[in-house]
Length: 296
Image 1: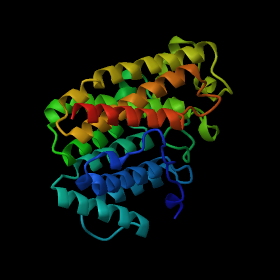
Image 2: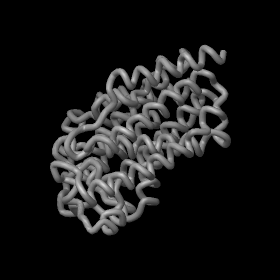
Image 3: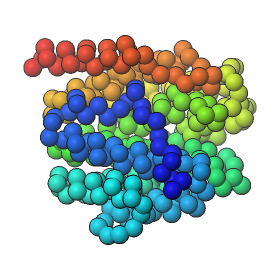
Image 4: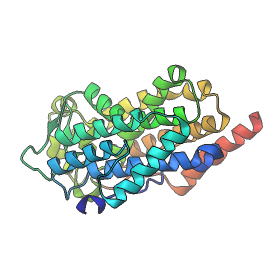
């Protein structure tokens, strides 16, 4: 099946890092991670038309309930997810919200497709009108991942929910900027609202340029300003999380996010994919593990 040929790349900067988490939830985190990769792979698959992607996402949601349907690979992922949810006593609501949000990017609901006639364009060719819409779109897809993690570890969603949402949303926006023109397409367009382009008197075509200069660079920095504001909102999260290992995990993610934002400002996301070095990634891990050890 064409939909099974495209899977998102593993993300060395922000992999789920289940080994940092308590042992009893690691398998559940891996299961949910496979589901998220599958759903995002379907939504961004350029080999499928919008209607085909919409239909397959709907099939994945139907498979959250027991019953026949879907391809063999899909069934394996969704069956594992159903069993995980049952083991942990967690509802399928977070998974459903991810599927619904991805479907909105596919169908263009609440946003304007940059190429309305291109039925096979990937989901990231969607342009939001305002920064608030960009944040809402990113939150819809990313926040349920964080909320699911909170549920797995029994954290208080009322206390931890908003900063978790802010962190997950910032990560999704930073990833879109980081990947820039990867595969020859303006992936950054997903997180740049039309209002920013209009204010700078540029168009989406400028995001397909070989490098970011002048007003294009200014627009990218404006988006990074917004991502940094979300990270600032998320800084309280390690202070309100009860689980020690999850607290360390969040600090590692925050550390990497700040480093990636800085790298995106110094580098040129339109010229090349921006990413952290292995040293930077490991520094965030070991410094925060040491911090956790000293305080324990």
